[in-house]
Length: 292
Image (cartoon, rainbow, N blue to C red):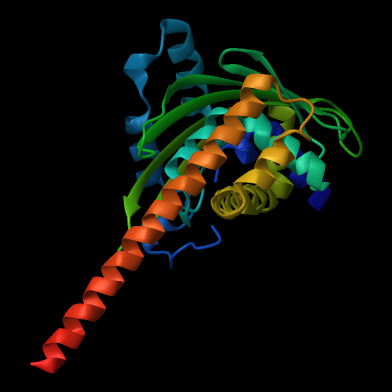
């Protein structure tokens, strides 16, 4: 049953795990916990960038949101992460899936089939599309991203096709901590509409598994992106060599990965120098005060 739950999560949120991002997550407050509550749902609906959607997109989003089998706000996560790394992986989710394949932790194939559209499939019988309907990627990761997913699963032990549509709303921001390092906060709301047969199965048997798996996937993705940023900071040349092993990336994306890793290392070196200089000045002032 657990395997069924995992596969259905892939169906109902085809690219949930590809949206970025904590090895340095802070303690959660109530506002940061996962929820399926009405207040969170209403706030998420109000935050959807409706005015940026054309009529066809708006109708599709409204239908899923208004008829959703499941609504879930994943646990909000805060990670020690370079905002430009966060943005790069969010704009290029195929980098994440190719790295996971290389590491042997996922068998998901993700192919970019248009400027804002991806096709996904795996060996378990899952296939689907993911389309970025609206995305604002800003320098400090002050982002709002709306994604529409459609997916199908057919395979053992499910006796018939299960289809689903989902609307994903990703919001993020960043702040500089006292140590000079940037931290990125990310929140993901999901509205999932499963076909009648699948909805009956979800309601009767595996809703808790779906919810727990979705929360886990988002948390683990956040951890992975935090690790990616940390590795880019400490070993940009190694990340460049790694990019050359990701055969299914096109050349611009591969070069983009190398550039963002090199730029991240340079930024954190500068942060380290500034922080070190500040400590030296503070020590000097302290010693001077003691000598008076």
